[in-house]
Image (cartoon, rainbow, N blue to C red; front, side, top):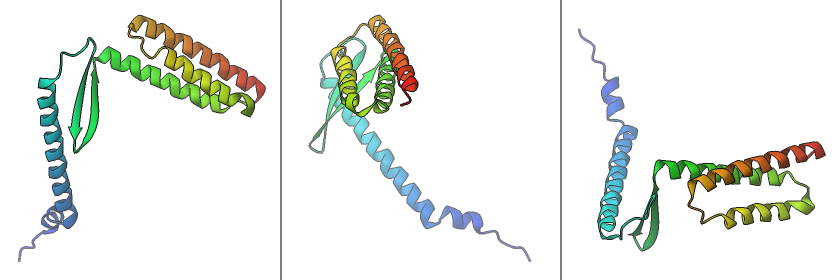
Length: 145
């Protein structure tokens, strides 16, 4: 008498597998719909600026801004954000009286250079920021914070 192995059939038709298939289908359909909508809006959008494309989408009454960068701009932006996060983390270690002023200074420095589009200047500012962050970190370590 031959035995029948039903484990594969049960696993394939289990409620969890069916739910997973349904969710995958729904997510794919939503992503495809958003992609088509973005293409329609992009065709009507004005010519993109150098280095980035900005697309405004209106999804269910909500405006969503989608920004795409070229690779170099994307990497520089990631490095700037990383520097900003690291700076705020180090600022949290500062003594209470100067912590607020230090956080405000970090934000102000970032805001002052927000509109900088020159990649060479951005690299310089990142290296200068890293050096200043290293000095601040060392000073806080020496003070025991």
